Image 1 (cartoon, rainbow, N blue to C red):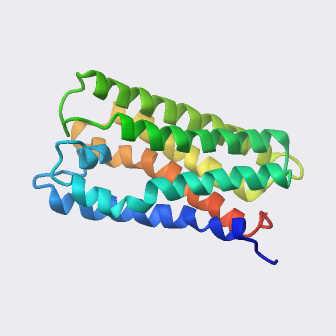
Image 2 (cartoon, rainbow, N blue to C red):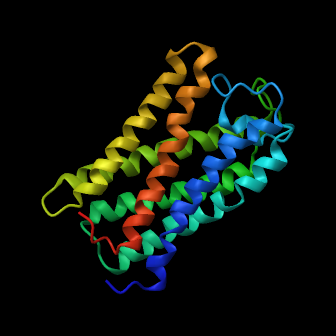
Length: 211
């Protein structure tokens, strides 16, 4: 296929995944005493976290690339009328989730890493998280159903199902596992959305010609 600019922009989803992964892996080096098995990823970027500067450097491409990728996927899907209306609704919801995540977490970052949620800013951080999770789950369910139908994009349905299971493990696991392992299951949720965005970016790069 002859790729246009919008197809090449799909690679920003993969760049976002690489940037986010680098931040998650290497930011703890600047946070003495950080326990990745116990603490949330958001602790690394909290206002009082010693790793905040390193996190911002490593994750610099994550936020903008995620939004750009998801937005371009939506524009392409709408313009080319990719798959069914339900499929495109799923894509739109996923794009809205990326915008809410990008703007919401910048407006309401955690004030103190690893501390009890008490202030208005910290409560709003949790509200943003809830919105992100709900939008993510809604979009994935739409994509699973749409992709499983006749003439649906089966590959995206499978990847959406994988991301959905990861989110369930993360959401349910945080309330089930001992606090010492909170960080492990929480990472299933955070990487589900970032990883799926990279998948959509690759599909955009290939012009949605992968089934």
